[in-house]
Length: 102
Image 1 (cartoon, helix red, strand yellow):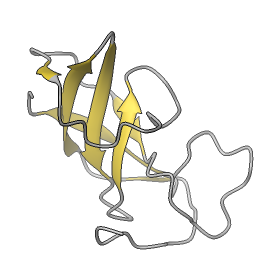
Image 2: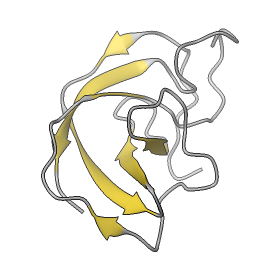
Image 3: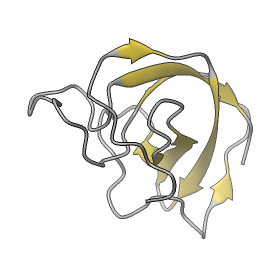
C-alpha cells in the first residue's frame, strides 16, 4: 500500500512535514504523507476525518498561501491498538504542516 507501515497506534508528535492544499469542488483538501506510517492521506481542511474517496485528487485547483495548521494521520489504513473512538483515523501521529502550495 504505497510503502505504508502498519505501526502500533500511538499519539506521538512528529517534526513538521510538507503538505499541499487544493480546492476540489467546494472543499479544501489537505494532501500529505504521514511521516510515521508513510500512509498517503487526504483530509478535508478543518475536519478530523479523512476525505473519503478523494485521496490524491487529479482534478483540482491550487490553494494560495494559507496559515499552517496541525495535521493528524488520517491514512485510514490498519494500525494495531487503534481505539474505535480515536480522534483521527490513522496511526496517531500528528505534526505541523509546512505549506508547499498546490
